[in-house]
Image (cartoon, rainbow, N blue to C red; front, top):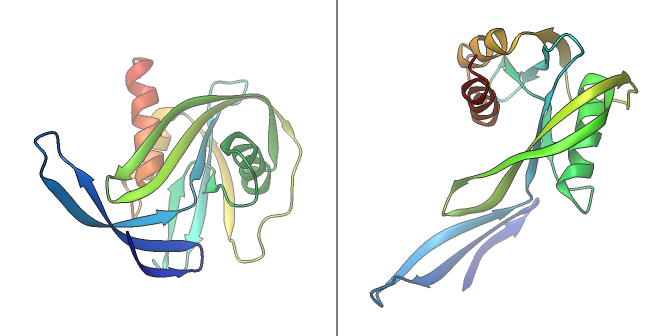
Length: 168
């Protein structure tokens, strides 16, 4: 393994791995902290969505509450914190839903959670975030995410998987 870059929470290395037939694959791999994403459901069965201004996109995008697992030891704690910071709600029930990865070349996991039994329990938002909170049906949330100027892939994946599993 050869390190190409390390800084700002990122590490890029070249690595080798064996294929089943003995050949060697060599590629650059990116290491970054994991992320946590929350499908938070209200008593009415709606989902809490955020509309966040992303300055490097110069646009608002729709997404589920999401953030880095960088201040905590585990994704569940990060998901709970992100939910409180971004929506102002905590959940009496927050459970793992599924985990995904972007690609073999990126060593980062996306941890998805479902949250229920919400109560108002805010934490301060990050000083550099501009976030609005909205409650809507899963179908409307899918529409908003998929028609954003930039699609938040993790939100689209979580909402579409949930809709498929629940016949929505």
